[in-house]
Length: 94
Image 1 (cartoon, rainbow, N blue to C red):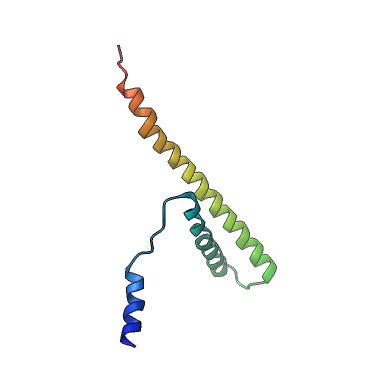
Image 2 (tube, rainbow, N blue to C red; image 1 turned 135 degrees about the vertical axis):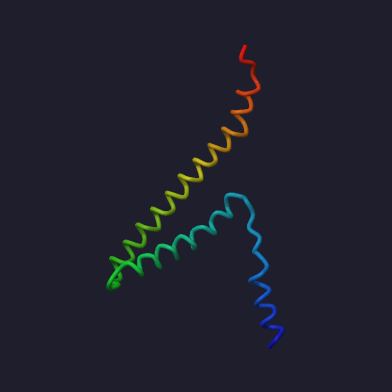
């Protein structure tokens, strides 16, 4: 029993390795789905299946679109700072 609990605790202290490729962004989908469902569950008075699923789906897609827009903005900002800005600043003003 002690070995099992030791392995269980060790699994929570060792972080899971997630690559930085675009496919690893699929781990975002279950996280966003759980956030949307839990948030909607705390906001409604009575859970009725169809309206609850519809509102959760709308919130899911809203969060996902927001994350994609912010990621594209940050990617563009990183491109400007690392590629465009050094070329502009390295040129002579005269």
